[in-house]
Length: 359
Ligand code: PMV
Image (cartoon, rainbow, N blue to C red; front, top):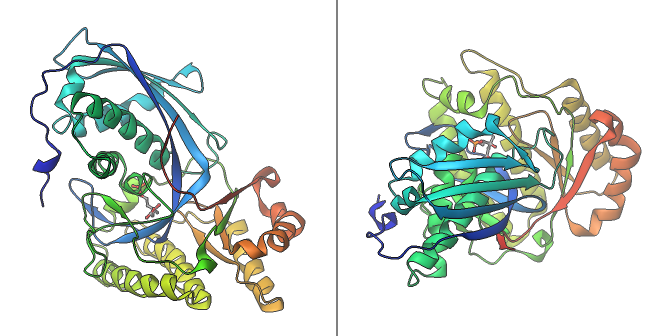
């Protein structure tokens, strides 16, 4: 694997007192990534819809460093100094330092805010780390003006991945594949690539309503969950299944076979949680209301001609996926029936988006 392409030559330029601001989205996996090896390499390929409304806005200000021997940064979240988030970001900078040696020459002030409620159970690491990665790449572009837009996206995804695997899928949209897969041209374990095949119009503007079932801290972090896939009795079958599901889904997305889409997406969600149920030690991230919502979605589908389906992240919240032409009907179903199973009746209406935006 060629990671050397991401190591720049020493730069002779210096850019002082410059701020870059990016908005980057969250994403929801259709074929899930669960299991990795060092350094943040996925055990199988995954594909996700990029979201639109759930995003992070981050600015990074770069000024001359007061100590060039280590990476220096201050972190503000929604206007407040946030030292609790610092270790994760410090680890991220440590991992990317080889690929961005110029960062040592700067002090950084990072200012970040999310469009979704704080601790809503929506992972903010994908949008948060991809936003910092884009700001770093904006600096790199000024230091090395000849780098191409394509390289910037690739390297931003590569850097974001080193912070959080799924963050590699938050640079572009509407569909991104991360992980080497023989049928997806250009795919790589190192970074996410846009799904380049022509997608059927039924999947355009696809809707995602996120039902906030449980907003508390997860009992088991995704880092611990990924690690439990080492020595997991079903690990190899699972990694093969995910790669096969991606082959199938690639065809389904092009042909518009929405029933086949539903069956793969729901199976992927339940399989992800089945891996948790069968880990050693085992754990459960779904809540009773997660199951209640799933059962109600199935009844709703039986009673109507709806193509509504669900997927799950590593948590209790439920993502409802449906075509744009069902927006109104499903909206009513959520409001009248499903919202009562959400914490404080909260849900977020989102849809598929196109990726990182400079502000
Ligand atoms: O990127 P991480 O380490 O937070 O892992 C994310 C894993 C899932 O969200 C459960 C699946 C995925 O592919 O996004």
